[in-house]
Image (cartoon, rainbow, N blue to C red; front, side, top):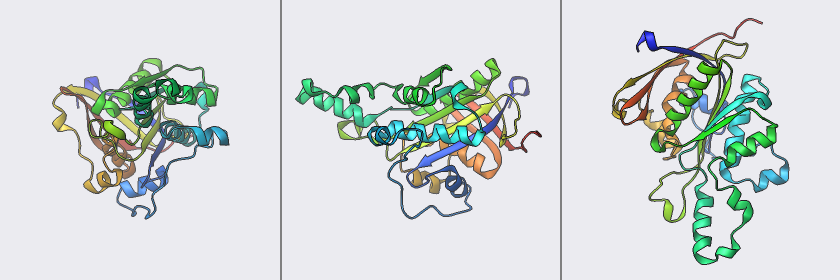
Length: 274
């Protein structure tokens, strides 16, 4: 890692949700190899931030993003109402995209307005800001297979340039219908972080990072057993990073594109004294 280009950030909040790993407490132990995964898989998260009726109506993408966003903020002990955020998703809500395509072909006048407004790429971020009363800026992005790394990089840049904590949420859901063989994604996977420019009372890890040119083949590979647990979700590129967090630290390389790499070194750290 080029020391002249190295930047330092702190991980204050961590969250994770997948159907075989529902929550960071479970996921961290399994990803580090300290525990076996639960036998029974969860269906989908049920974020308490949403009122019960809205919680039932929310699409999987929104429920998943809200769950990990709230979990990361709770772990960091920060008020989400004042927190800038970055949301990354490879495909957004593929179930709603499939519904809209089929309805437009068969009965376009029957298109649901509610489902339509959930089809936009920033729907989850919008729900989050409304539910938390947050007026801080948010960013949503998609960079296909590089979405997790690109979202993490954007978050790191905002932390470094603005000097304030930023929430990062990455998620993808199941592909369905004719899109499934083209935009492959299985199950639900969401990951959240709160990153801070300084060590705080909730800091879990110190994160040093830099970028360099290089091919995506140099990306760190996840453990095969953990990859099988995720089952081919489009956001599975987050696994090496979360494995390093679970293990207490280590180097991780993530491809930002065909010719650019993000190098990260995680080190566990004690929270800052009060």
